[in-house]
Image 1 (cartoon, helix red, strand yellow):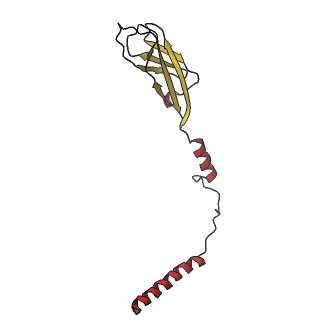
Image 2 (tube, rainbow, N blue to C red):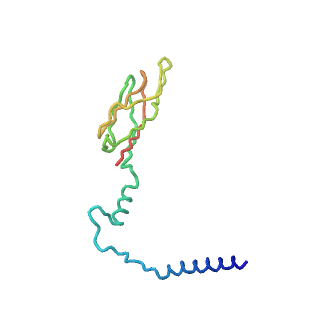
Image 3 (cartoon, rainbow, N blue to C red):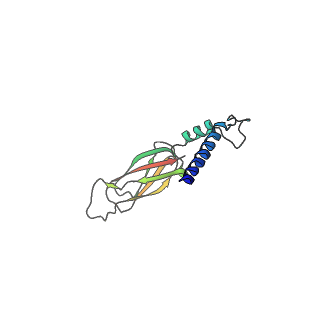
Length: 141
């Protein structure tokens, strides 16, 4: 019993000794001696870069392309100028404005060309009716 008591006293003394060291430890100065080097950035610079790049999307351009009867392809002017190399195009299914049961429809359209000011879309079927397809262009930074 006496040995357990001695161990407890030694452990308590060690614990008190370790805790007392934290009271006497001295911290250094937290202010930097020199301005940031060429590869270092201040916190203000980092925060402003994070705020500026919080969304990778620069702009979204939406529109509708309408094609006439017996037209396989349509070109639409965009409402804003985009960079095609940084853009993704989403096309909706083609909507037939007048259905002809003698045709062989296949719902769909594909992108033929994308320029900074226009989009060219081609329908995936031989159509003898007017058709419409909506598009969305997402341009990234």
